[in-house]
Image 1 (cartoon, rainbow, N blue to C red):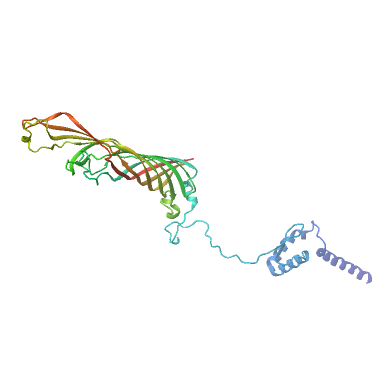
Image 2 (cartoon, helix red, strand yellow; image 1 turned 45 degrees about the vertical axis):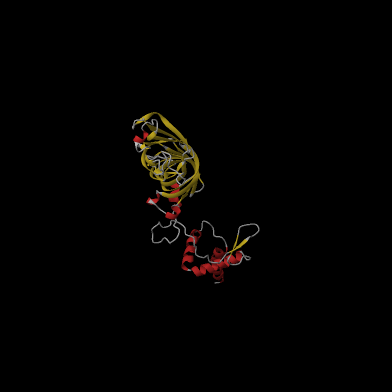
Length: 392
């Protein structure tokens, strides 16, 4: 019996020792339980989360005795410790992502926004050259006599009070070179030429009594303007938002510069016969007396002068691809005055008494020269047209 007791004790001790060894010492890799430990650990964590968290914190505190809860120790040699910020961030106020399109009920009153990504193809960038052609839809202004307020203003044949411009087909051409300052602003220097504007075909000229009430025809007087301007354009799509799905970009522009305005020589022809002597019988036996005047030609010398000019423009831009943009615009341009040189050369046919109660045409024409008889008028017009811009 004693031997059996000792054997039983030894067997029990071995069983106990093997159980304790499984808890206190590493398990051999070929032991079947070692392969299933991670699975048991996961099941334990899922079934008993509170007990697992407590056991984990006890192990963490034993391993890092100098690090308090809520702190993180970085893997550095100086044992740098970062404290966790427990403050809760406030709700963000900045809007990110896609914004509602213009016209949506979600858009607040005030400045409207657009998505820049939708407008990249319309963005102005770098240098560009442009060329435009327009049609002058309206010409404003007229030629007026600067001497209208003077005494005996219309005693000179061919002088007149006022005359509207005769508008032929006017196609103003423009060439510009510029650059974009940013996505909203661009600036360019332009040269623009107006031609095809002419003087009036008819005016009311003097009748030798000081009244300008005789109709006379006019030939010549073509008007041209060569204008250089510095222009500034501002894109409005950040205010107007989407137009045509983002394919159109509205803009406004202003410009200021100098205009060289020229009016060509013109002739005022008055075919009226003006009676000097009412009763020709009074000229009997008095040959050579001036009895009448006809066929009056007044040659007005043109002139060129430099004037301050400005313009206001509005339009829309679209992209044609390949760095080419197309502007459709309406423009008001004021080019200052066009003014003559003030010189009028007058030629007239004279009729003389024959001494027998009749009259004969003189075999010469009388010529007179008048100076400082200026005529001028302001040039302003409204144009509609298109401009091609090539960006580099």
